[in-house]
Length: 225
Image 1 (cartoon, rainbow, N blue to C red):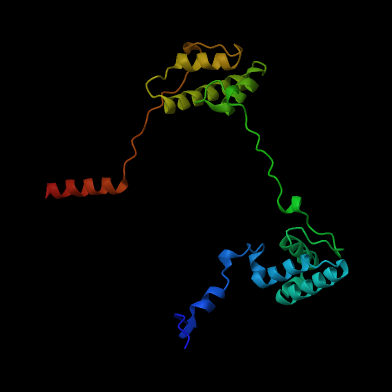
Image 2 (tube, helix red, strand yellow):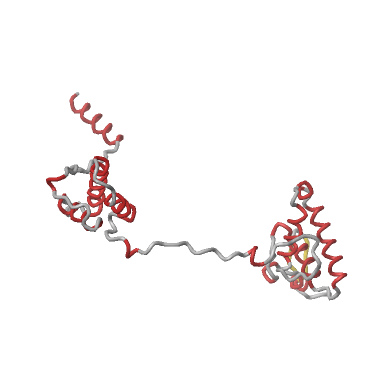
């Protein structure tokens, strides 16, 4: 009588020795393309390890035929044949040495190095609360010829600068400060005094909850009854 302990799996008793022999995915190399599954990955790995090049090529063609059967939609795709061979090359981790029937994807194409995102130098921003766009706008307007359009645009920029400053520091806002900053950013080309231009007095508006307002009104009506 076998004394090896058993375990119940799916309603049947399986010995511990058999359980020990069952391979688990966690102990295997990762599947490169999960949609093809472990078995197809094993076929490609086996194909890579065939020493004879001609036999290896025949094996790869057989794998391509199987993949076509598994994914019939690729037959209708004009690029379906290329996709199959691209996938085989990817699953081989680009180690399959055969004469491919089509131009296949290479490692550098499958794993491209992302290009760096150009960031502006933060030191170029003179006043962070105004931002780079305002600074660029000031330079453009400063180089314009004197005209009503230029005066109008200076007024728009100055008022927007005041609004941005108010959002940054509510207590340190003044027309004189805004105009000094405007003069500095324009390299002295836009030199104005508070009396030369009118800047709006921006006021913060309290946002009320409409439900709160209705409850307050209802409460007042009840008190009148």
